[in-house]
Length: 382
Image: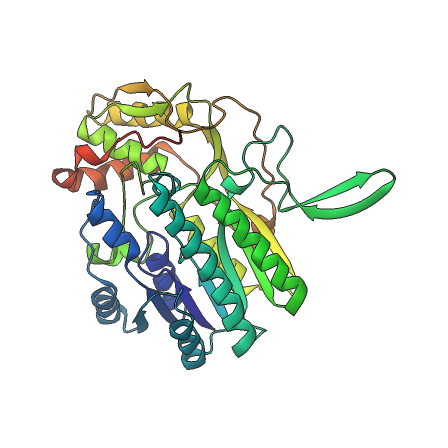
């Protein structure tokens, strides 16, 4: 297949390019380096140094003989994006090209406006480019489990059957996001659902939980192929942050009571999920939604797992409860359904002590690059 990866420089985007390329697909990656620039602006650069996309593609080709084409540009520029579609004629487009951080969206008004503008205009442009060039092109969009919030009922896989006053219908599951970023992702889903109904395009929306991990089978070939691994409050996911905090001797930052429960998955499983979705596409006129998680944990449970492994490896890990800067429930019911991707063939990698120990060992190798001032700044929702 011809696979277009938007947001190809990111934590998930670059590994996705390699994953498809390794399996014989023709890949074009696109990025505008937003995350690199934002990390420099906020002084929270990734743990491992990473060559730029063109350099990484060159390393990949030297090691494997496989070519990944790259284009640097902004998909909110419709003319740029349309030319990419006309040049490449993708059969599937993997959409990571969004401002991906809840804390970033809550820093101030300008970053909130950027989040809304960037995320919604980019998604709109993709829908129009598909309609204009090839309506059969399958859009695989990375959504987020954060769209659902923490309802006091089971979270179904995207859709909910409703009976009201003797009549029945099926609706998108009610969503109540906990940040402006997550709200923009809800609006992404609504945009795509509108164009699925209106134009008959095909979309798979992956409601992904927080991802953890430092490497994939492809990046293990050479450290220059590792993903952009953030550990800071703005761009780092919780388990990745905890590992770096433990290695650096920084007490693990558990927000409030620590009962916030979410669905998590290994970065290797993100690769599987996206690949399975792209190679087994939804039907024309279908918005297919999968909940992309493999296990659920509370923040306290994750902190205790990190402490147990860290202590065993010689780190004196402390757990510290800090006032919660976010507006969220700290204790709640949480039971998401996630059978769809398993049915497609997902083989999960579960969070074991060995997995955590491997993460510790990689972080230890780069511990002199840890910027302790970036770990926690208390970006407040209030």
